[in-house]
Image 1 (cartoon, rainbow, N blue to C red):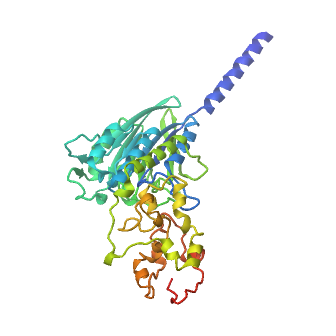
Image 2: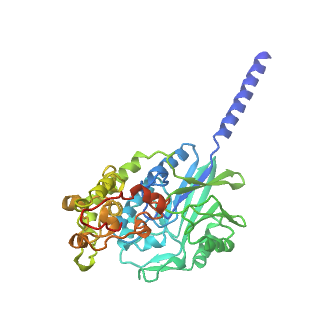
Image 3: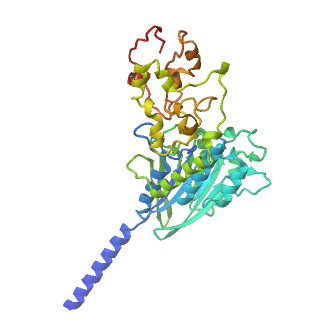
Length: 453
C-alpha cells in the first residue's frame, strides 16, 4: 500500500512539474517591424547618443529569437533615399541585411519605385524575402516579382497560425512622372478583394501602409478585419504613442531605422490575442553584430572600388574663383591657423580615416574643403591640402583674398554652419555654444587691416 501511495505521489509530482515546464515554454508571436530607412545603414557618428543601424537591429533580433518566440520581421518601405549610384548600393546592402535577418517581406515605398527598375527587378528575384505591394503594378520588359500579399504559416505554442501581410503605397506620395512603367491604384479599392479573400484564410491580418497616419486611419475604418496597421511618413522619432481605430492598432516605427517596433500576440484554442506593443530605440545597449559589421565594410569597399568620390559632378565657381587650402591662409594668419588646427574642424578628415569612411562622398563633403566644386577636394592623392574642414569651408574659396588682401572677404554667419550642422548630423547645434569652441583668437597683421571673421 505504501509503495502504491509513493508511486502515485511521484506520478502526480511529475505531472505538475511537466505542466509548469509546458506553461513556462509558452511561445508568443512577435510582429517586428522597421521602415523608411532612407539609406541609413548605421549612425554616422557625428555626435554621441545616436541610435539606429542594421548592426544593432540584428543584435535585437538575436535577443528576441533567444526567447523562443516566433518572430516575423517586416519592412514598411523606402530603403533608399534618392536616385543615384550610392543609393543603389545602399539598397542592395539593405536588402542583403534584411535577408540575413530573416525578414518576411518588404513593402514598396515611393522612394523604392523611383529606383532603377532593372535594380528592382534584380532585387525582387534574388532577395531572400518577398517584395510586397497590393496596389502597385509594373509594366517593364523585364520581370519584377511583386506579391499582392504574403501569407505566412507558423506554429505558436502548438497552434497553427496564419498571418497575412498586405502592403499599400499612398497615391498622394507617388509622383506620376517618376516612371511610365509604374501604376499605383487607389488603396481601398485594391485592398477590398484581397481582404475578403484573406480574412477567410488568415488568423491575423497586418497591413504595411506606406502613407501618413491620417490615411491609415481612414483605411482602418474601411477594414475593421485588419488587426494591425504599420504606418509611415510620421515624425522622425516616435514618442511611443499608438492610435486605435476601433480594435485596429496603428503604429509607426519612425524614420531612418532608429526604432524597431514589436507587437506581441498570444495564441489559444479560440484564436489569437494582442498582448503588447513596444517601440525599441536602437541605442548602444545593443552590441554591433559581426555579420552586419562585415556587410558595412563590404559597402565601404564597393564605394572605394567604384571611386564614387571621383564620380561626383563638380559645380563651377563664379569668376574663376578657386580653393587654395588652409596652409596658404596660415602664411599670414598664423595665430588663427594654429588655433584652428587644434579644433575638431582641423582634424575632421582623420576622424573619417580612423573609421575607414574617407572614400564615402556623403561623409567627405563636411570633412574636407570644397568637395563637389571645381578646384575643391577630390581625393587625398590629388589635393591633400584640402583635407579637414578648413578656413574656406566657412569663409569661401580664398583665391580672391590672396589677390586683394585689403578687400573684405569671408564674412560668415550661422547659416554657413548649418550646411553641415543640420538636424540629422548635429541636432543639438546651438550657434553661440558651438562658435565658442572654434572662435578665432585676436591677431594683428603687420601692415594689413584686420579682415572680418
